[in-house]
Length: 307
Ligand code: GLY
Image (tube, rainbow, N blue to C red; front, side, top):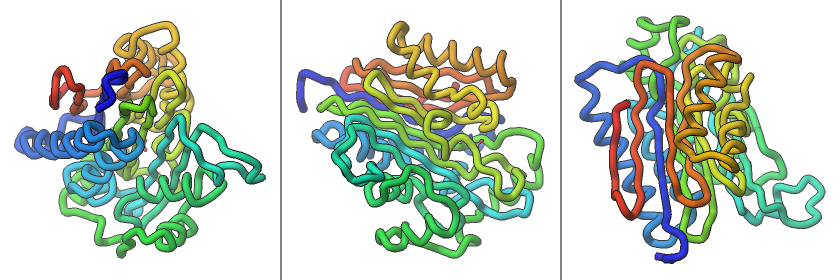
């Protein structure tokens, strides 16, 4: 491990209604497993990008979160998923439309996808394999397939749990369980990733903040952030970008709290945010009933919090 920069990681399993108490131990185990996969990447000198993808894929594969397998259902009772990631510094010629030289900012996103088991990997493919940032629907699924990612029938992503929650919560409250991860690696790279099935009962075709760089996901040279909660409020306030910009003058914990306050005042609604700065300091805040997070730093090891 490079001793100059200590790695840091924080992941969330969504902010929203407090899930059933009997699910909590399993959710805690799943989050610690996700954080541990990212930890392994970071302590072996791997990139923040690989770390946030490892954590996010693990949560997408779990039926306990609203992302990938187990995604919330829209008003038609179908799955439509969004995901995005951002990384910096990141050398990538393909992110320039004119191909004339590299950029140090990497960003990729997919929206409204129905057949991709791990939407965050499709977002990564948009970043690395195209000159674009956001690809939607069937075209994103074709790209994912071309890149060797697993496709499935949309029904294969629907769990009994998601159907039950659709009946209970449709149109009433944000689903608990969008997932996200942010990390700093030993080389100083910062990355953020977010993946979701969106809000239970959302209008078909609705795209939320988790697909929108700057809103649900953001990274720049001073920090990285991932949001969860009511996507419309997060988009209206470009929550993640606002919070990361605050890091130039305030600590991550305070920036996160100020960002959630700003969202509440300006747009209303429930949200949560996780953030890490370039010094490896971690912050988080939410104004929902509950939010699950897990963290890793070399000093404190792996931790889980049900907030
Ligand atoms: N934050 C997830 C969504 O609103 O779609």
